[in-house]
Image 1 (spheres, rainbow, N blue to C red):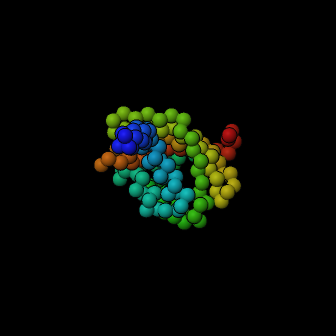
Image 2: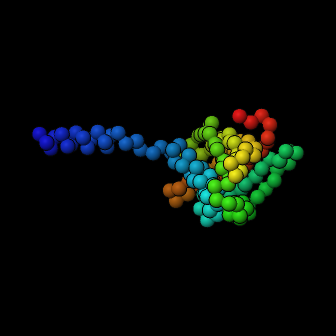
Image 3: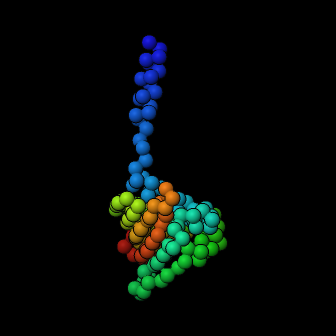
Length: 146
């Protein structure tokens, strides 16, 4: 009888554990990038991106500014730890095989003070079993923020 009870308890815990979905894995990859930003960890930040990743920002004047992953990581590494705090929400997330897209509105805080808001548009690719950011473009503004 004890054995049956132990088996029943074990099954309860095993079945209660939720396997991580592809969507969860994509969210984890994106959240790792923001955790690396917040901790000013250039090495961890670089590891979030594919080797051929493209980073762009749509400026207030409407032009598109390009930045390399190395430039971005170098800039982040100069910031005091915990000063760059980008708070996102996952509004849209789609996955098909080894390709994923995410649309993440955000509010950015620097040193605890609100700086700006906008939207990030991510494209991720699955490489060697890990999601990597292949393309990231964002908007930035100070009005119309939530």
